[in-house]
Length: 211
Image (tube, rainbow, N blue to C red; front, side, top):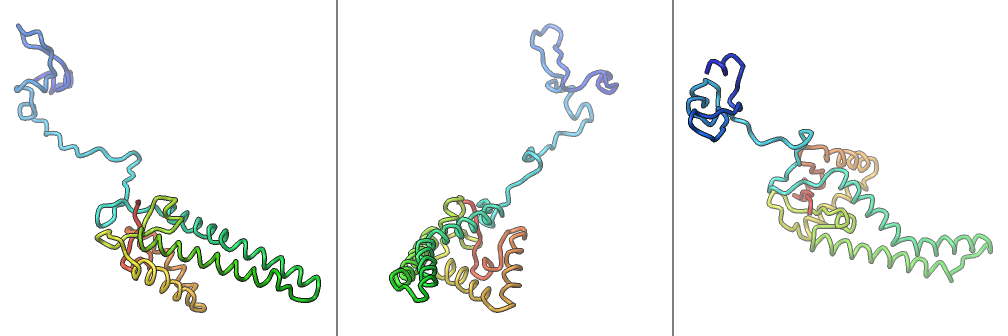
């Protein structure tokens, strides 16, 4: 005990009793336990994650989708939308150039261009709505492994919440002149809340988690 109190040994120092062959740490001997030495018992909790980072969890326990993941999914959806509109847009552009050169409209490219553009946009809308209603994902969200669920029970949102309220109504508000631009900016900034729910998530009663 005097050695421990004097700092010459600690409870991890190995020793053995006279007549025994097994070496043990001093802490394994009853007379050197916490009660005998006056040392407080260890109350260390679980080790923290490296760098102190802890994954944010949704109300139901799922891991919240990262802000960069959600931004990336939105960018991907925009790129995919441009890809679907590209064939029809190219036809309209070419038709417009030809019409400008001949000083007359060229229905050979303009009419098919409008049809192809409309068909591309319609096809994308159908695909996105189907994925949203059945899986809570757009193409971009599916590629980045995140999905939309209800708050707080993390169920499939269904058509009304995931598209009608979260997409359509939110889009209508964003389209209001002047007010819509401010609303859209504030809506995006809400992602920095602890639960990462934007205004459109609050309107629809949804949240975005890792799939």
